[in-house]
Amino acid sequence: MYTDQDLARAEGAKKKRLALAFSVLAIAVVVLVVGLVIRMEPLATFGTALFACLFYAALELYAMPHVRYARYLRDIKEGLSRETDAEYVSISSAPRTSSGVLFYDFVVRVGPEPEDERLFYYDADKPLPNFAPGAHVHITSFGNYITEIKQT
Image 1 (tube, rainbow, N blue to C red):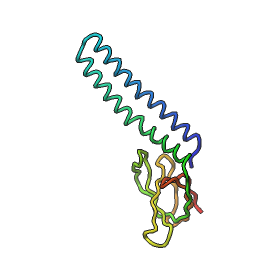
Image 2 (cartoon, rainbow, N blue to C red; image 1 turned 90 degrees about the vertical axis):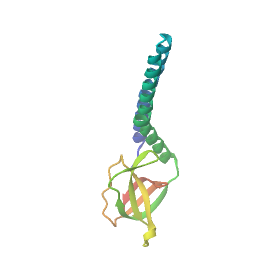
Image 3 (cartoon, rainbow, N blue to C red; image 1 turned 120 degrees about the vertical axis):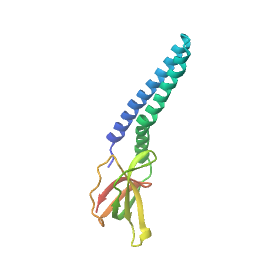
């Protein structure tokens, strides 16, 4: 399900977005220095505050989702995996955030009892699988995060 190109693409996007966020921080420092040198207190105060807020917004809203996704891809590539044979039950209709990355809830049953249901997380950036309820699937996972899935 994941390839080296996925990790390379995520790392590239992360670097570009961090560079943009830190360029906004550099502008904040320049505005502060210029405001202090020309002794214009409103420029030094409000200009720096404005660009500092823009830096924080750019970092958190624009760059950090890509940083977290790249970290997730590195973790699943290097971490231990396990395999599970199960019966597909359902997948959520809307993604949710786990560890700063968007995932769909993917529910499977590994035994006949209701408490034998297991929750896995399916990456929202990947195309959704088209399994009928009750289909037998083979899941390779890192923790609860699906790294590969096949219908058996």
